[in-house]
Length: 463
Image (cartoon, rainbow, N blue to C red):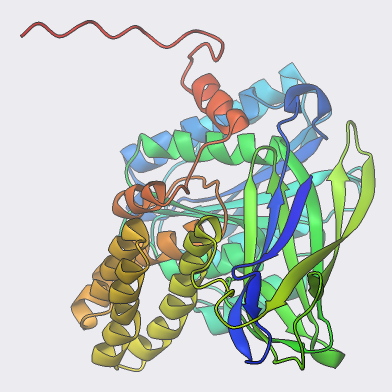
């Protein structure tokens, strides 16, 4: 895996303190994921409440059946449903053609029922994912799929649901798919973040299959897990904030430990920290280390093997005389910094909006619009203006839950499962929300296409 650590400004005046940003980059290589992939256990947890009746449940069933079709011998799959009650359609079983056929038949018989016991379904899926009978070294993913808001069960809101997830996650990871605007998109986003999985916004019946396909493609092409970055300032430097939306904890000596759940083959993930380099007494003859990063991760190897890898990175700075300093940040890093600044501003503005401070929330993000334009970052400026608009008043804030959730999740990694349409377009303009090869291949397979077939030639237009 390619790893980098760079300061946005690498030449600074020696006699003045200087604030800049540290960008730690991770880039996973392309791999032959179909031959190298580990065995997986996938447990869809499907909402069968009354609102799922009709096309919603029909496409959800077909999506789960396609997922079953595309698992291999050695993979496991189980299915849970929830309405008022929770039903284990099948515990996780190893896939063979007879078991696939039996499981698909059980899924076909699912019928809509009544309320939405989301907590019960989630907890049952996690319980099955942590069964001791499952082989060690297996990637275990629970996929929560719902079109509504939790209204029955042991917990229905984030403050109560998230601790249940923390206490019961075990070795499983949890993805959360929200079907339509009525689903509690913010809750599902938070569950997916705490569950170390993916968030997806499913706009309509046909999108469900694409979401499940990309989720499976991403899981099968996981390159590494349990990534830990230990960022250590050298004497004369300090970390002032972690801007990226990641799991980060301060440590003694001003260090910060950052944890990233996974990275897919071909994916890029970048962590941005606000830092300060203090003044020095003299010009330095050569660049010196301002920050060191100890990085460790576990590479997913063929079969159920896992290989620990590590490296030490150094972000260097050159202290120069007045007039020789770098006035503008490195262009290739400035957009990455802006995206992290926007994520952090959105998180803070959403807290203001929940307190009813919509004017302040709007202003808090909108100030970045002008700043980004001044830095020549038009795509990021457009994103800032849109996010600010989502905070404008109570109505806008409520209407844009799917958009805001998609923006916040989509700026955290280069690859996504499925996001709200406006957010997806905005993120693509920023070079994000990309499909990996594995995700596209699985999407084609779910839709009955030949992944190796060339794209159809476009006929020349006659004017």
